[in-house]
Amino acid sequence: MRLGVLDIGSNTVHLLVADVRPGGRPLATTSTRTVLRLMRYITPDGSISEEGVVALENAVRVARDVAATEKVDELLATATSAVREATNGLEVIARIEAALGQPLQVLGGETEARFTFLAVRRWLGWSAGQILLFDIGGGSLEIAAGADELPDAAASVPLGAGRTTIEFLPVDPPGADAIDRLRDHARATIAPVLSRFQALPRPDHVAGSSKAIRSLAKLVGYPAPGWSGSERMLLPRAALGSWIPRLARIPAEARQELPGITADRTFQIVAAAVVLHTAMTSLDVDELEVSPWALREGVLLRYIESLSWSAPSA
Image (cartoon, rainbow, N blue to C red; front, side, top):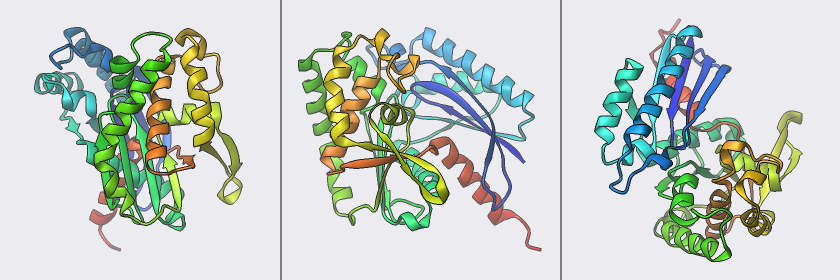
C-alpha cells in the first residue's frame, strides 16, 4: 500500500510518500516540500493574511498533484501550530480542504508531540530505555518523555523558530540584547512545564527530531558510531552555546555558507539555537542525538499500526 503524509507546518508544506504494510517498516519513495514560512503572514490580529492563505492553497495543490502522480492510495493530511492558532483558522482550514479535495486533520500541540515521540521511539528502539525528545518547528517547541511508545509527559510551548525570530530577532543580524531577551523569554515559557519532565526518571537517551535541530547538529555536532554500524549525529549543548554569539553576528545571507544551514533556515537558525540551548539547559541535558524520523513518520507508523490491528488473522 502506498501512503502519503502531508504535513502543513509553520515553515513548510511537506509531502512524504512511502510504501507500507502491516508490521513492516515504511519505505519512503518521494519527499516533496514547499517552503512557506507561514509566520511571515501572521497579521497583528493573529490571522493568516490573504497572501499567506493563497500561498498555502498553491502549495497544497502541488502536493496533491504529486500524490496523484505517485499513485498514493491514501493521503493523510495534517496541519500544526500556524493553522491551529490562527484567528481565521476555520476559514483557512476550509480553503485548504477545498484545494486538497479531502478533510484536514489539525493536530493539537501535545498530539503532535506524541506522534513525533512514537517515531523517535521506533527509530531508537526499545533498548533505548527512557527517552527525552525535543522538536522545534516554526511555531512551537514540543517536548515529550517516557519509556514506552506513548510518552508519560508531553508538552507544546509557543517557542518555534519562526515565531521567536519575528517576535524577538526581527533585526538582521540580531544584537546581544535581543538574544538575551529571547533567552529570558524561552526560559520563562518553558518553566511551567518543567515539573512534568523533572518528575520522570533520568533519560537514557535524549533526541532531537526537527530540521532545525538537524541543521544545528551539522554545524556544531559530531558523528558517532551507531547501532549495527550506522552513523549518528550528536549535538553537545556546550558547543551549541559557544556558536550562538557567532551565529548572531553573521548576516542571514552569509549563514547559508555554514555547514548544514540551508537557504530556507538562515533567518530562523539563530532563534532555533537559542531556544534549543535554553531547553537543554532547563532540563540539564548535556548532549542530544538527532533522529531522522519525526512527525510525518509518526503519523505513518500510527496508521500502519491501525492496519495491523484491523488485518484479518490467518
